[in-house]
View 1 (cartoon, helix red, strand yellow):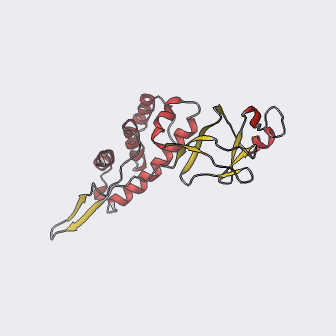
View 2 (cartoon, helix red, strand yellow):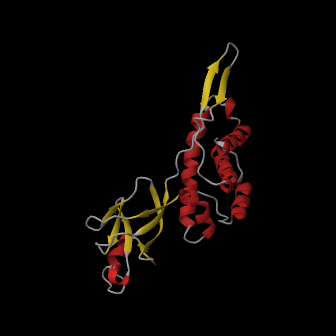
Length: 216
């Protein structure tokens, strides 16, 4: 049962009153929801390295993967990849770098990748992971996946007097987010509908312990 999805939808329809808009209510809702999910994930990823609570909220989206042998030092990223949180080689953390940093590190003997010291550097380059040294395999990575689409579905019928829209629980796809994120999703969606809830958003950030900044 898509319990969380229906809860959010009912709250938003009550506030935004989209039934009177003349729009396809479910299509409009699903489109805005996809934007909000991506914005929330982007924001939490941007502060995850500095805020433990942000990583906890991202937990339903976190995936663990072990890399295979790179081809010329490059490893294909999974199709659902969004953000690299961390990685380890033989129990030691790998160094997550920008492409420019990686090039610089490789010129410094004390910082370049060296398997004899279990030191591995990694950077994101053109949709792939650039791994140094080139022969490093079996790197354990933790990354955030793209939020799966959550959609609400209705069936439609008509009588002589009215059009009837019936919620289809079996076809509706629920959120992967935990219960703790639901109020935040509601407030972010309300902002999408043009309802100002800045104070509520600020209180929700404080409650979750992430930040007082408004999600962009």
